[in-house]
Image (cartoon, rainbow, N blue to C red; front, side, top):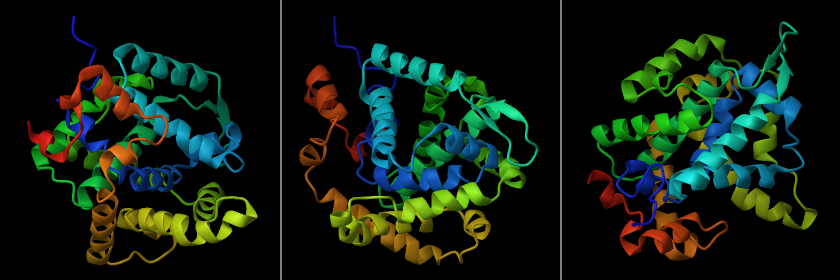
Length: 281
């Protein structure tokens, strides 16, 4: 019997795109975008100690994405079940009405899902990862699987770029940059760190955060209250960063814990190696 390729398999667009180093910038953009939904961000504020465990939270999210993309079917389903169980036990208070609500409400799960998928696709593609519109549509459709893992009806998740754009147009009236969103904004620019690491934070992390913020859609800049940078300038910065990061040998990048890609290649063979040119197969 052959080894289990997992939920997405090496033939998916997801398998190729999620191996790109610009996923880290995309993940930060997703946090900025997610914070604009008042009920979603309130759920984070009331149930997460992200201010003191920023890096742990970031690594847990990366581990979930890596497990569901490159892990076995069993490990991906187990990760999804764990997320659903945690979410089912958490609640928050609406900042405007005082209503108590579960953080696993479908509309909140859908917002988080769409903000992530849009950010991953937008940043990686705009930074130079070659995808046709058909392949981008395929990527979005593939992530109905990840929607199911977190507790959504897969049919409720967008299946292509047109449906994703329609979703954001529909949800925009509900968005706003209240106190919680501004706290996330401030945190992402200046996350707590050891005093000796503050210079590195100023030089390295702020550049990542500023680039992720710059890649937000215009309405997000408007809500945050800062002028949107020129699109052409942002694209040049994304492409320059993507080119630089892709110069680092992939096997060296993939040595970072928890090594999902290397484990998948060991399980499935060297042909499972992610590469942009395989996305069109």
